[in-house]
Figure 1: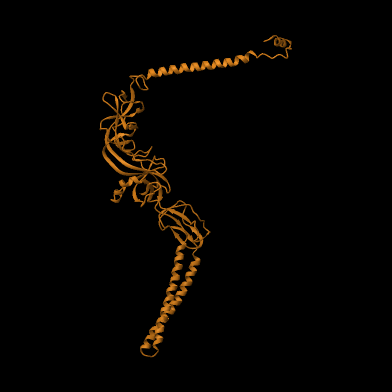
Figure 2: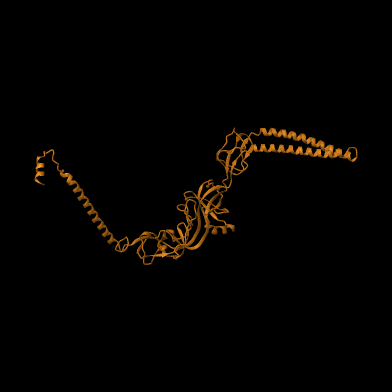
Length: 439
């Protein structure tokens, strides 16, 4: 700083001089910088420590300390029966659903059913006022009697004229004309009889009975209303419950296995489970297969019929249908939980006699719940790992937990969980048939 500048600053008053920055303003940025550097250093030291510790603990090449035994669950490969099942989503569909309509116009005078009642075919349902039709019937019966009298008189005249004509007492033309008069009266009598029968039918229509055996729904018309044949709502709806059917769709790829048996008259069993696929509702059989494949979904509709003696199936109810295609007997089976899929393909961990495990490729077939058919790769009596496979590698020594169950064998379908059997096509929940992996 030169002499002039120094002198100028000295001449300034204290209020006019530039203030020096406070000490804490200068110290705060420096303190924050030092704290940040310290935190980074601590994190680097911790990361180095963890890396060294992990490398030491995995020096054997795995995630666990070298020489440690891995505890696993095991099952014994066995032979048994496996069912080939197609799973599908279905809807309970009645064989017959009838909307009871009036066939005659008139006032509804009486209702003979209770809502929700089970009725039989021919049971009384409703009554329409029949008096107007009874009066018309009496009128037509009177006209019929009148024309029948004319017909009888014409027939007597015809017989008399024919006799006189043979005696040449009257003109032959008069006898011939009488023949046509008799025919005219016969036509009138027949027309009158038709009118009488028509009114008798209308009177019968006034007494409405159930056309099928089933359950009546809610009442749609109350007594006192004037009902007409043009009404679209009807009086009530009756649904047949016994027997009842379930319609479901199966993939077209399953048709070659199903159609030859169906065409040969073999009974194809279908079981229906509830919406949660937990409780067995009913057991029935395939009654019909649709005549074409839906090109949009690649499926074909199948109808299965159930006796439904306990009314467990309800119309329009959603169910899970299981179609039994075939039962494979005496095949090699393994628990489904033992099967792994990865880079080697389809494989299992086989427990060797020296308590080590080895990877074994297998070829699978039909899946039946907790069991899977093994076409090749395993033999009965061998043991496979079913629990703890995520901790294993080829050649690792394991500690096998005692088996709590019997050797793998076919069992009845589970009452809960996922559907058993071959994975079929479900609309909205598409599944595929198990592939033959592990070639």
